[in-house]
Length: 284
Image (cartoon, rainbow, N blue to C red; front, side, top):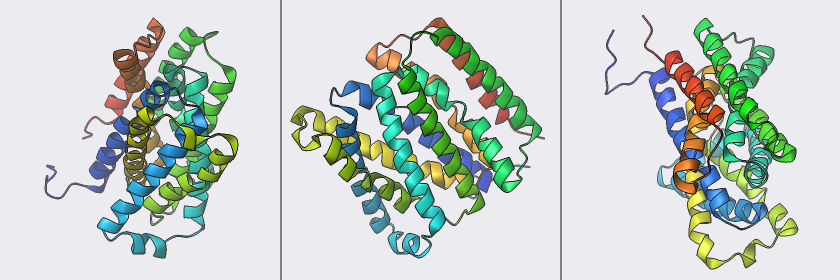
């Protein structure tokens, strides 16, 4: 059966939205490592600009009133998850390699699948289970080449970020009417006073402001498209698509920052990429 390009199916729209978010999220390590400011200074300016871009988009598309009307406790919960996950995400890049953050993030399909099974009784398809197993194999290959070369604190922060993202995916799957824009903005807003307390973001060097504000725009687009796509797909499939960041982020770090991961990272990334592409191959 052919799919009309003018009326894409909800699943196709979900796949496209999540894929776009992955491409934008994959640049996070470049922004964080490319700016020599401390993590909380980056959190502040990225959060401030991301909030402005997100609210501006909602106003331009007349979505602010609609999102406020549907804002409930699931949206508040997602906002808090996003705030803690964002702080951990940016800090992890300062303490470990981009490749390590990406490979830990690749475990999100398993966490999302477990949470969805526990909370929603949503059983993933056999194809998703097999692809997730292959993804795990790729992660283990990468991890084997990274033993002894990473910071435990940075890895733990990356793990917490992964847990919060998996939880958000399950919330959007259970309550698809939950807004995506306002929670994304709110998750940045709640971190602003914390950043002012623990750092001095107002003293940031002017030459790094374009990069930090650009990071805010990228984050705003990535967050909104991810949560919008999560409404349309099973939690495990959303998480599996998100694992595309695992091979893409280290590749960008290599091409732009000359951060050379071990050979195992390239091999494991290839396994993960193959598993994700196979999971999305057209079914009969």
